[in-house]
Image 1 (tube, helix red, strand yellow):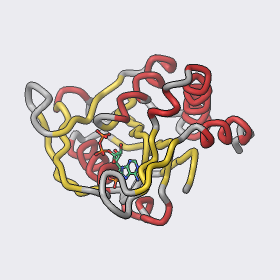
Image 2 (cartoon, helix red, strand yellow):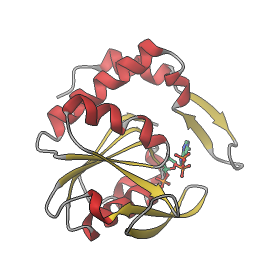
Image 3 (cartoon, helix red, strand yellow):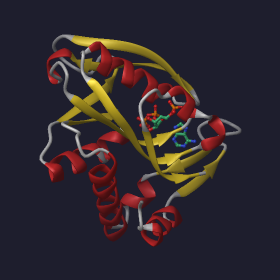
Length: 179
Ligand SMILES: O=P(O)(O)OC[C@H]1O[C@H](OP(=O)(O)OP(=O)(O)O)[C@H](O)[C@@H]1O
Ligand SMILES: Nc1ncnc2[nH]cnc12
């Protein structure tokens, strides 16, 4: 059980929503409005770390999604003294990479991971700001599996439930705020 309801309410109040961005019909939920206020960002960090400790106690590695996931994943990894691994959009990572195409609420792209960044059998937690259609997290799960590692779960700050992204994600999903 999580008894941090009043803290989560504060976080929710600080998420700005922008109708019709980046395309008509989409309500954009903006994580950056939290980061503008250090005390609120610190609260979010505390919540994330506690949720990892209680929901994914066996995690050995934190992987996050380009780019907004990078604002959160390293905070958690550093605090828990775990390795951090980036999953980046196509063409940004050097060395041998593994790729996976995906579609999301407003487009299509390719994610990549460095082959050497995860060891076989490693227990990985995927972190991102938001779950919409689930395309991004689904592709990221596939990348971890292609590395022969194990996805112990996915942690997002925001879940847009109407888009049913949770159905596309095969690993245990934990979201902090639901719309
Ligand atoms: O569940 P989905 O439909 O796949 O959508 C969720 C993804 O969309 C956003 O990323 P975006 O690709 O816009 O990139 P950004 O983080 O660089 O802004 C968001 O940060 C998630 O990663
Ligand atoms: N509605 C939304 N708001 C912010 N980021 C998103 N990524 C995909 N859908 C999104």
